[in-house]
Length: 264
Image 1 (cartoon, rainbow, N blue to C red):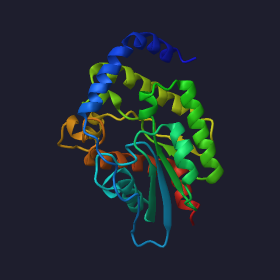
Image 2: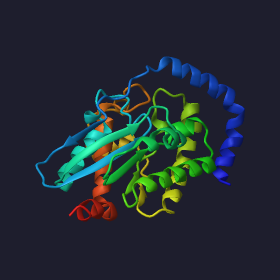
Image 3: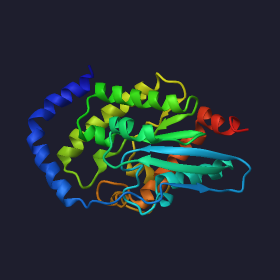
């Protein structure tokens, strides 16, 4: 039993009616943005080598907040990796706004037919937290997700990227940021434990914070500029986030070696 989760439940249960009312109000006021268009593409650097990556996940991977995937997370990640690896990159997005790990298992994974694939990047966690998933259920669903992917892609690196920064969402009340944000933190720590049980599965566990991006990339923007609707990333957020994940991939010897040597 996760002690921090149990304590959080004891604190949160009396607040559920308030959370429900606040959640309904936020849902009615936050604009409903569409998913990005163009779920596949390529980035060429005139190389004789070509790598294939797929991204899987919830609304952030689905590109809610930008017009096209080319200017969102996946397209930018492909561009960054193509430049860093000196390799052409083919990419495709498998994502749906509102999806949890279980829904990905049930409705996304069975339809993935790309072959071969050289890297799988997964972004989930926000919807699981909003549906108050327990660490136990989260663990079961994520493990099932990994196992299902392994049946399709035996030796392909799987990278889970950062959990969503609920505590920074400007559209949310302080109460929601506290309760759901703490649950996201708990699920994120559980994710680190999960991937440790699998070979060639990784987790970029850095907590996403706007100030970190502003300082690291010397951006002349405010934290509010990181959100398109108060909940989902803006264009600059997707691109900086993708650049940061690409840096992690290039600094990970295991993932980088697979992408370089296994294709030669």
